[in-house]
Image 1: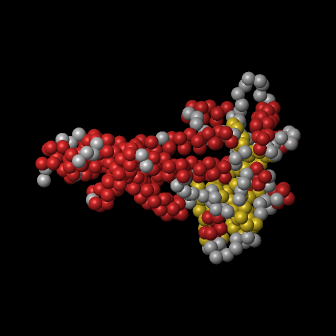
Image 2: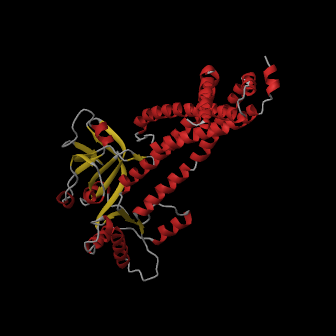
Image 3: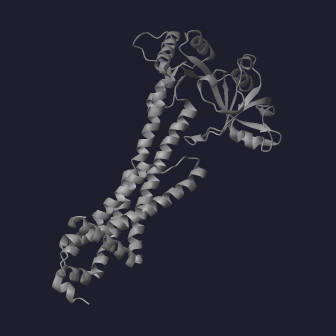
Amino acid sequence: MTPARRVYLDAILEAARACVANPLRSSLGALAIAVAVGTIALVVTGLDGFARYAQRASARAFGSDTFVLARVTTGEVSRKELADKLARNPNVTRSDVRFLEKHAGGEAVYAPVAQRRADLTAGGRTFENASVNGTAAALVEIRDLAIARGRFITRDEEERAAQVAVIGADMAETLFPSQDPLGRLVRLAGRGFQVIGVQARQGTTGGVSLDAYVYVPLQAFERAFGARDSLQVFGRAPEPERTVAAEDRARTTMRARRQLRPGKADTFDILTPEAARGFVERLSERVGAAAAPISIMALLAAIVVVTNTTLVSVTQRTREIGVRRALGAARRHITVEVLAESTLLALAGGVVGLLVADGLLAVLSVPLGLDLPVRLSTVAWSLGAAGASGIVAGWYPARRASRIDVITAIRLE
């Protein structure tokens, strides 16, 4: 081993001995870093988990390759723009849907959806404010409805307006807590509907539960509630790579239906997968913008604490440092030793903070329904930040220790 490397190894060993010899002081410094690193891991992992959850929830609620044609779709529009659209755009009707299907040309599959809120009952139990959707059998080809048990509506049931229903997980648990829901009746708007399918648990998106949905044939929906003023039309290309062509086909067909001349604005809205994904990405970015300032503030507070504890260590060891300098220890050796002490404290605190954060995230992931693993990149970034904080925190104490006057230090008792 070269003399230079020996100097650094001795400095690290001395730093380790100093940390072990003063456990209370070392624990305070390590605790500050642990809190900071734990905060970073919690924030970064939580935001990452939220972003993944939002993307999955958006795909479940909307469909990864699905577009929606409607009178007006929700989006980032002003009140005036919304009012203008409502005034300009006529309702989307069943005849519009038939026209779209007639001229699909194999480019798209369509499924109309009418929606309203209503209560479902079974036996003496009631599920309040369910989202009732009247739709077509083709919807299962367009969206991943995650049917866990049973099946979806068939085309025959759609055409004869059969009173059948596919219900969400929340409804199955509330209405049939100790029974198999398949084949049983639920009452909707005073009519009995036979349960033919149950969805897997979907979670929530935008604060709205996806497990409180019930799907029935559109004509059965209209018999129960009356025809809706306007429908939403879900569409999808037979193959994902033809999604853009399917959207163009739907837009062209609908413009022809409305007899819109070139250059005239559409009198309908189309919400594309890119628009839905873009909304999720913008939401994630806005939430994620808080990660950097939170992490920086936590690290700054930790740096101040570690700096103070290292200064206390230097003050307590002033005479020892003076004696070592008198025996030939170079200033560089003292500087490296103090920096090593603060860095070791920071890294130890970083490891503890990551372990605690990982445990908390594992506990929180169950009630929140989120997948919250601490990624290796987060571990590396957090430990790197902890090490860098230790170096920054130790710079001033190391500089001060290296400049201690030898004679003055030796005279201290």
